[in-house]
Length: 74
Image 1: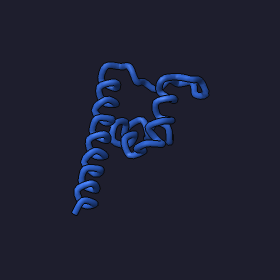
Image 2: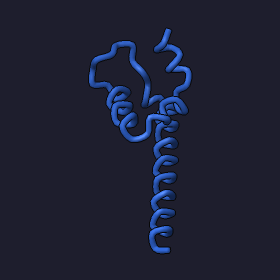
Image 3: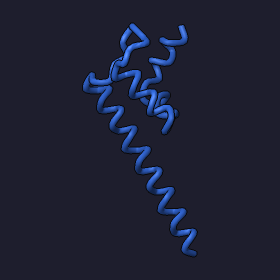
Image 4: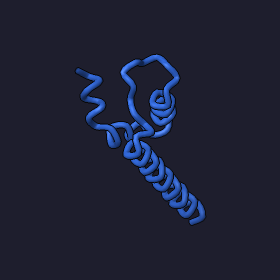
């Protein structure tokens, strides 16, 4: 019983953190803080952010910036 409660709390914490991360990324995108520069290889906020987000929750890139992926692939 105790293990089940702990597992449920862990899952809820994971969902909450994921939602907070998504909301933060979307606000940064909307405010123009998180924008992709044409020059890659620098220490831009864009690159540093996605380096860390990809380690934590890579699905957020696709959800937050779907058109950016298409532009990079072209």
